[in-house]
Length: 312
Image 1 (cartoon, rainbow, N blue to C red):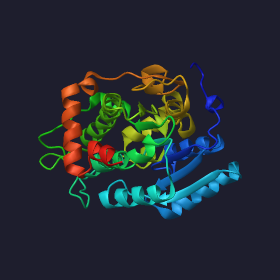
Image 2: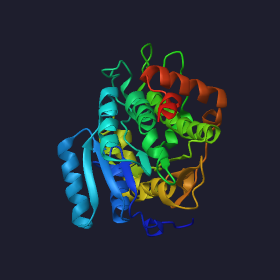
Image 3: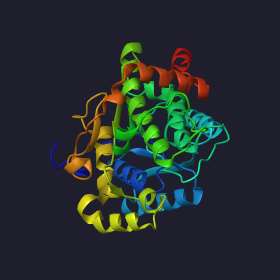
Image 4: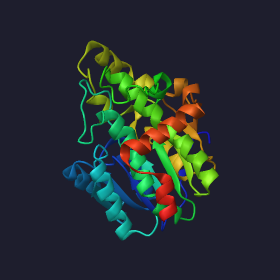
């Protein structure tokens, strides 16, 4: 997979794809490449105006793109349920789900309408609920894949089961690292449970390394001295959003991607470079913690994979 690029994406004609958080950055570049390969792509986001601009941008490059925008706020379980209902009404199957949407290191703790800490909700719990609700459509596809966006930040993450929502102690980066660790653990656990239950899913994860996106540029401390120094070093240690999307695209489309695989840039510290297998930290491989997180997620969201699979 050395020097893998979008040229390696096979034809996706007839494939239906959902990409969350696709109105900019990594999600937009992911949706662009998938549309260019012939997929029927549904972009989702919270900002409808940005969604329409994203559609226009993709159609400028690929005039024949089969692409649409749907409103979806991952920080709202009601919005997740509403989107899943609309999708099920219009689509019999789903070939690929890219769980990309995210927020990063919010300076002050924010709580969603469901009572969840915002980063855990947007980055993880919303995606857990979305994936479960779309399980019937995924299972009807010939070779369904789910790709979760994790991060190098998972290396510093820990799941604080005693204070998942950071009500007693909130630190922006700690909450972000927890959410990205949760996304990786979810991908690995979903693959294990799919095999055990016979769901037929291929679950993977990816991270972009250090990609230059609005998530970075508009993040906390964007005007600090440390951040300004970081921008000076960016040409050496970072890559574009399009390059950062390559590990996701590899996981989503390559016949060489493996079930339960985790992919990222293959350069120094996995900051930039062509897609390759990424390092998974020991805490992401903790089977007992993964099972606890899965059960906690089902309880918090009120959405059960097993119940949905049984009812389908």
